[in-house]
Amino acid sequence: MNLIERKVSAGTMKAMEFSSVGTPLAMVERPMPSPRSNEVLLEVLACGVCRTDLHIVDGDIEGTLPIVPGHEVVGRVVSKGEHVTRFELGDRVGVPWLGSSCGRCTYCHKRQENLCDEPVFTGFTVNGGYASHCLADAAFCFSIPASIDDVHAAPLLCAGLIGYRAFSMCGDALRIGLYGFGASAHIIAQLATGLGCTIAAFTRPGDDTGQAFAREMGCAWAGGSDMLSPFELDAAIIFAPAGELVPQALAAVRKGGTVVCAGIHMSDIPTFPYELLWGERQIRSVANLTRADGESFFTAIGTIQVHTRVETFPLHQANEALERLRAGTITGAAVLVP
Image (cartoon, rainbow, N blue to C red):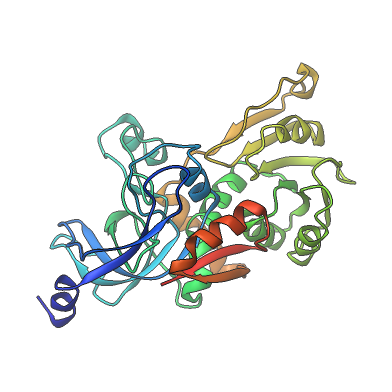
């Protein structure tokens, strides 16, 4: 055991812990964990605040309690298990939502670990990055490009990755609508326009600030979700967790077009006339991510510049960051810095 490993093994760590719906996260101190053979122990450098974190604390989805949320983690390796060969001490890595998969089920054998029957989710079924330190399965971590600093890299670990998977489901679409212009949409808008796509952004009606931000990120048009874009869409991605947007998006896409629902949770989709779906339109959902998605995404942003817009909060202000996200007053993405 080297000096760094001895130091962290003897200390304690701090974390913002969520214990029950209706109560705020609380700062706790815990013994420093030791990595298992396949794990790395990370000193957290930054952790993004994702809408999925809101679904967890609001009880929309139910996982392990108590839990330390956070699945957009950028950290530095301070200790590692004996079987970890991908990373060395001091390496900077990213931890995504999919913390690990079983490796045994049909989906894992088909390299569809995003659909694994026994998945592990960072900050939901195992403790995440709202902390000074966290553990992660090394096989599911990503190397972070040196050109992107900690704070601006954090939103890429979910907002970027899930957005990229949703974008890939649009196929060869060139005119794409983005419903809900937050962390994911502002990343994918930049990537898509860099690839030659024309983007229409849909925000909450009357959100002039959000619409101006969308145009700043390269969108050709921005307006309220109660409006139609001035051009017909080949595809639409719904980032907002609002089921009522599905019929609206179907009405906006051409025949043969695709509507992609990108959230892990969405309110009920209302009934709608079959004519909105007719014409070989299709509705798809996005479930988690694969490691291949991550590798492709980081390769893509190595050639097309993507700059995340972030607002930072100290770790102890995690509740404030979540409340700001709930209120829709974050432009871009919120990031905690321990």
